[in-house]
Figure 1 (cartoon, helix red, strand yellow):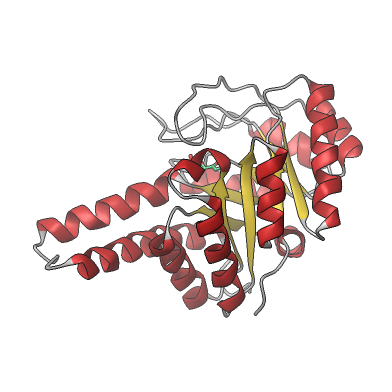
Figure 2 (cartoon, helix red, strand yellow; figure 1 turned 45 degrees about the vertical axis):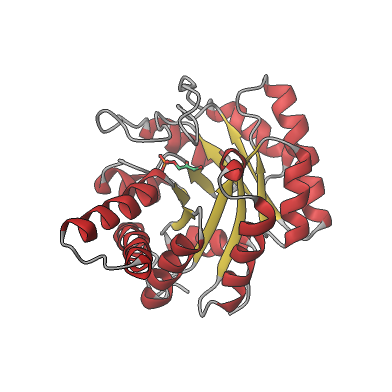
Length: 281
Ligand code: 13P
């Protein structure tokens, strides 16, 4: 199955009422673990990396790896550039063959966010790629370096934003935040429902780590078709390595590598089941 664009995956999810997991990866082990899970469960998937992570995982190394892994997969996999900050890096991702990009202008005034998102949509279309935008502000930040306050999406503004930008997927802020929550968030399902009634694009839920399974399911019912998971993957990989050390199962580097792949695999398997995307490839 070839590397695919994100939009057909999300359109199918929208029609059939499930969500596609968009798993953040930082190294080959995470890519291998996520792909093992999606191949085994015959799930469509998105693998992604955010611009803030590139200090640890340079785009010129991890980007081609992600694209090659998607191309070699037996299930449809889209490769997404998450929370882009600069046009330079977005363009580089598109050159490497990423099939969707996001320029995160959610912290900017509405008109500015709409303008730069529309420009990014135009750039992506020159590469036959998709574009995600965000309206309202998801809390925290992808790598925890900023504590951005949650600013819930206005459904009416979301419609205006969608009409102005033509994005292929729209991220909403409904009380969700990046990173581990101190307690499970109280999501604004009313805002989600109203937005989904107005906007015809698939909606995206960021900050998936720590959202309760029933809340995920309710979000999917109300119109979420892409769910971003980052921290849970990193935590699961770390935990898996810790457990393997504690069990004295690590006798050399490759045992550690196996534990890392296993951690990413376990986390993806857990979310695939909740999102209802197994056997939808
Ligand atoms: P978490 O780290 O909370 O899973 O958020 C991931 C995310 O939204 C990436 O865009």
